[in-house]
Image (cartoon, rainbow over all chains, first blue to last red):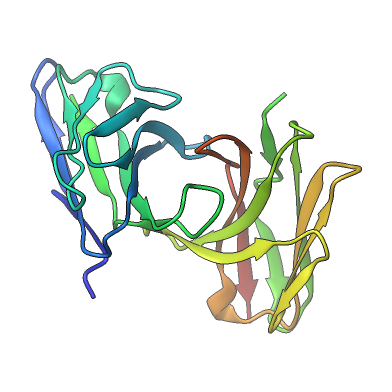
Length: 114
Length: 109
């Protein structure tokens, strides 16, 4: 089982560039979310989706866009990369709403913005 | 005050030792609680949910104290393979989870 697949695993960007982090899950989960993890801080929610066509903002949404056109895919777009967006990004999915069931994470995408 | 607080450690313990971690949370209306494990440079994975009555899974025991607003994780007979960062996770409101910064455990020979 593939579970949650994220690409790319590593990326270096220059300030101002844009890019998309891809996330796909094959578990038919309704709930998907994006987190970032920074040293000394807990994972912070960027955006989340409760189903195809429905997205909402998390704790730190500025500078990021998401869309959910299918149940399987939940890409995260960085519009104009900034050094403050250097981080490790995790995509996660769950069968039930977060808090009611297990979150399954992808392996992470390490982004460096110069 | 952070919404979810954990002692970052590291906790260095010998193999076979018993070790306990606490995690405090700020919102008394929090609904559900979890411990996740994260190995170095890997993704978090669910270790166990924390139930009001306490629960045990092999060498791991989780407890919830709503009155004092903390959860705990006890690991008995520590193994080298238990070395990891343990994340406290709390569902405080709606569809959003709040993660602690994690407690690092190093089990040594």
